[in-house]
Length: 303
Image (cartoon, rainbow, N blue to C red; front, side, top):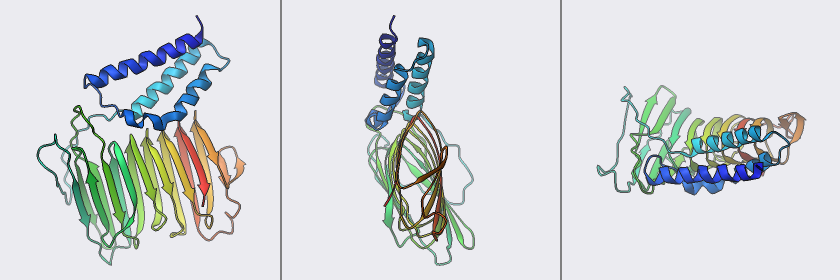
């Protein structure tokens, strides 16, 4: 039997099983984000033409499909109660109806450093606008519920935003979140992302460290030069990543990728998986990027 017949047969059976589980309510699968994983098609096509034994190729196909689905399923999560300094809950009791939610955190002049930890459910997320508050949060659509914790010391504020109890039900589970930040503190941002479309325009903010852990997500990230020494760490699976950096900054890029497509513009290759911009040594501001990607596509450019 030809491997091509097995190859497409496995894919059709796999897709059919997912549709059945979705219709039965066993899983909550965000099909609207499937088109963002178009690089997976290229990977599967590449596997199908490899000069390898059929069983090896079939194993690779199953591995790629399983990995992609794992990152796209919006799994049920239950958070245990924690002893936190402060907690806000602002939503309607009937979680079957769409919920709009908003809150803001006041800015104090003594705040020199700010830390933001954010867990993102399936949906669209934007961080780009400036605000006079320390942070402005607004969400529209679906029944997803968020709460935050604020911890303060003399010159530092820590903000933890996360989803509360999630119940998988039939229906549209997508929503949009818009977050605005104050431009004066030095920010450390930690994002945990799943099955989301994420737009981060951080060019106006002093970003010391940006950590992203993402799966089945589409990222558009624009960095700036407001802080002289920025560290960016991205760990992504089955994702599409577009990363833009200013030409005024010197940039170092270290990449570890598996079954991924890449486009790197404006960098010189130093070694395998190691790149630098031509102005790295003399640039006043520097950006250090570490990218660990699997079954993903990424484009890295300068502006």
